[in-house]
Length: 249
Image (cartoon, rainbow, N blue to C red; front, side):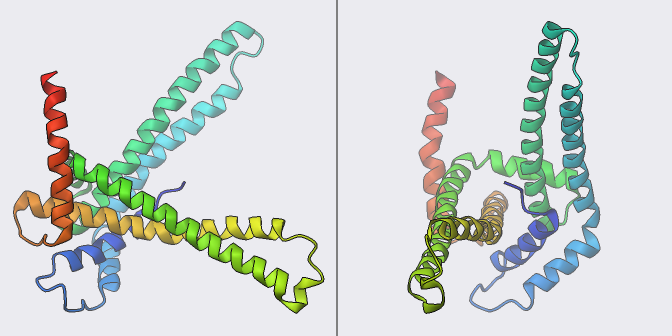
C-alpha cells in the first residue's frame, strides 16, 4: 500500500493540531485546512522535499539492485545463484529500511507542523515520543487499523450490494445481465480502493492525535482529557510490567 503524500500528511497534521491544542475545543476553528496548507507550502516545503529525497534515494538504490540482479552472472550457474541470493538479502534489508524511513519521515512531518522544527530535529523528537509511548502506540494502531479495515469492507460491501440490487431488479439491466458475479467483484475491488484513499486521511488523523497527545504528556501542557487520556494511560501502564519483566529476565 502506498503511503500518504507528505504534503497531505502535513496539511492534515496542521489542521488536527490546531484543534487539539485549542483552548476551547467546543468553538469552531476558522479555516484550519487552508491555514495548514499555507503553513506547509510557505514555511515547510524544504522539509517535504528533504524527507521525500531520503525515501527516494533508498528506493532508487533498491530498484538499481533489482536491475543488477537480472544481469547476474548467467554463464556460471552456481555463481549466478549466489549473487542473486546476495541481491535478495540486500533488497530485503533495503525494503525494511525504506519502510522504517517512511515511518520516521511521516512522524517528522507531523512534528514539523506541530512544533515548527527542522526535519532532522523533528524526526529525532518524534522517535523519542514514540519510544516513550510504545504501549499506547501499539494499542492505538491495533484498534485504529481494525476499524479502518472494517470501514473499507463496509463501504465496498455496500457499493457492491447496491450494484447487485440494481442489476437484478432495475428493469433496464434485469434482462441483459446473465450473472452479477463479475460486476459484483469489480465493484467491490473498485470501492475498496477508493475507500482506502479516504481512510488514509483518517489514519493520518489518528497518528496526529496520538503524537499530539505524546507531546502534551511530555511537556505537561494539560490539553489531554477525557477518554483518550484514560485509554492511552491504561495501555501504557499495562505494558510497563511486561517490559520490566523482560529486562529483569
